[in-house]
Image 1 (cartoon, rainbow over the protein chains, first blue to last red):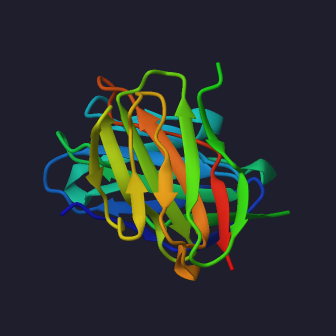
Image 2: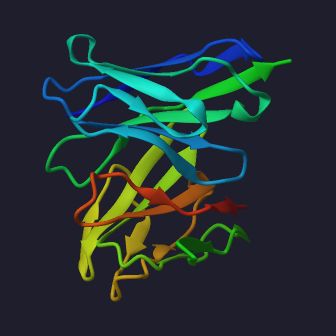
Length: 113
Length: 113
């Protein structure tokens, strides 16, 4: 069965520093991959998605993620953190033909002034 | 464009009572999903529906009942609420021809006393 691992339940970065949130999936076949963001007391919002087109995917709010098949990874990055990026981030995966999405346990991003 | 809405947003109920959480979407999406979010567990799928009158179990269906008589509505019922069902519940939907990304409602925070 497909699974998703997010390394680090909490990540802290200084404002203006690089944001790197790690995600690894288990499938040997390239799946659909997603990053979602959740702000306090809100639902999840789609940041970006990989659907077998370009391996470098750009999303909203300056985030991007790179699909690396050899590493089964889909890490999320942003060159310069902003205070408004403080939120919880979820990596998710779906196999082709599967109706469901499997979510990682989430990484809470803290931005230090 | 209302998108996807959930009601109520907050609910407190007593152990043993029946509770129904409502989900409504205006996109005519085929698929709808119910998740619960708990600390340390991320999002776990309770039930999902591929179309009206078609539902299927997710990862944690015990104690929950769903129905889908209309495409736009997907209510979730806790037949006899237990304290372990205290959680934040999210409804989501996606289109038939989408690349599998789901769109989330704002959530319902349920407390069972």
